[in-house]
Length: 319
Length: 299
Image (cartoon, rainbow over all chains, first blue to last red):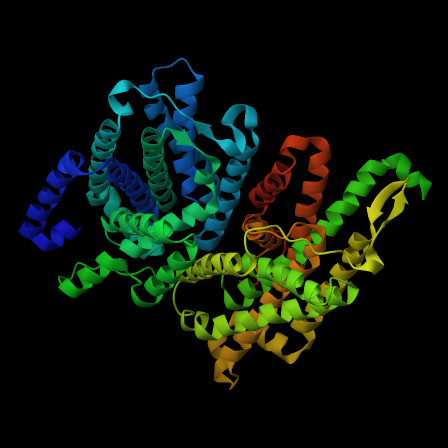
């Protein structure tokens, strides 16, 4: 999106960023490589949330469930089954997509706030099962020290794996947004009644975007297993879902790269702030208030607005 | 009376009463949430933090009065009022500027407030557990059902619940502000057009809803460890109760709290490890059968 608006300059800048991302491990200390991997995968979750939220106009309030379930599925395949660890990275996202399909089928009948609240209740059910089922999921301890294939077990290996997977996922999601399906989806967001009138199957489009979003959240969850070699039940808690939502909002939830930027800002801030003080949610809350009041379209949305290229998409209006 | 015990064993009877006293707390918090949702259309995640603040204030006030009975009764009055005051300031200062925007922004703003208050509580009261003594009148327990002990304080809660429900019904149906707020929930502009200051009515309704959160926190304080994080699970439960009851419907909140409280307390008897799953499963069953809640939503 941003690349489109900035034209050639953006393309050169994007290429420079890519090269920089590939070269980072050569000169950065270990901690920053870890930080970079975390930003990439968190940005991937936020982008995957933005498909149903920003482009689909669906109130996906409990996105972290798909992230967490993807991570748990990958971790359980690696630790408890005899399958190849690489299968974990395939089955993780697929499990998340299946869960997304099931929850979507249940929730899709409702709209807006009811949809979001029903999703939170279903997600909380999943969270409690993970949290309490000690023998299978490790309960509140989670699963630690997950053995990985040698190629990705080193810090740099994990970073490059995360980078590759994230870039491919972003490219696929970008293609989905730019496809006729994506256009129809944005049409549904802006006016569901009119879209239904011209023959678009509204519920089917929404369901598909929910599954796609769940799938890529699962991909990000599997990447978390690679980067942290651990999973824990807080990954499925509803507060994380809202934090991811804030990332989308901060970066700009009507732009494609906004959620990635929001994730980068919030993760960097958290790392910086928690080095200084124990209080992290206070500054996050204040930052959120600032964004809600002064930057409702997010940072990238604001920049696009300033560029006046007529590419700003309309905000969702409550009917 | 004895014939009841042949139908329902005493163990289950006493568990039902435990569930009912939990229901009272859930109802008080959820009804405030429901009031705010129904009239102002704010999905107020901050509500849980206010409940926590209410509980911590109860601790501070009751220790300031020497930890005795008087302290507790004072806290029961002052803590909810203090919470209501804080919420009124927040509503006037922040929320009222966002009513024209979509729900998502309001939801996120209340989440921002809950994040800020989570840390403020940590700053003021620290990380440790706090415990509030049960007032002397309600110490001890009675033997109700075939010798099963039941704490007196929980009996007190069972009395308070219906009192709050009646007071709330009186407020919504019989007072002028209640009537205006019901009208404003249906058509805000029309109410404004006949010359009523809707903005202030909204502020007062918001404060009353939050007062109920503080009251819930004050009432629950003697029965639990007052701790950080007590808001996170409660707010989720309260939201689910409001949804299965029907958004904005106070009797729906009562019904939802009953379902939730009883499913929780009886679920533990059936399957101790996963007892906590039952209320959530009940919510899903209810919503599959009646997607917009059991009773009529005010939306």
